[in-house]
Amino acid sequence: MKRYVTDLNGKQLLVTDLNKAIQQAAAFKEYRHVPPVKSDKERQQYWNDLYNKLSLLKTTLLNQKKRK
Image (cartoon, rainbow, N blue to C red; front, side, top):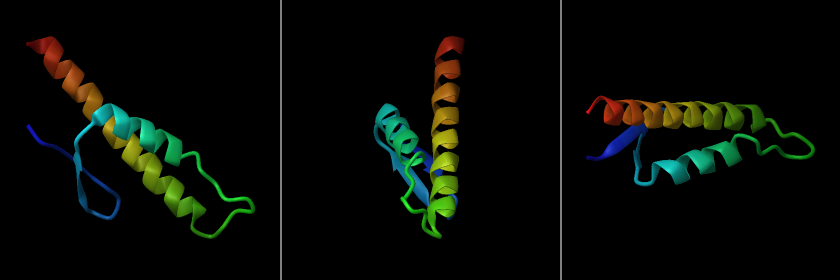
C-alpha cells in the first residue's frame, strides 16, 4: 500500500519510510538561519505542517493495526 501526504503547496508526497520521514521533518522544522532570513518563517510552517501530517499518519496506521 502506497502512503502519501499532501504538503502545504498541495503537492502529494510519497512516503517510502515513515519513521525516517518523521525524523527528517523534525530536524528541518528546527532549522533557522543566523541571522534570520525572510523565508525562515515560511519554511518552519512548511516543516511543522509536514511533521504533524506524518505523525498523524503514523498514529492512524498504529490504531488500524490495533483494531485487527
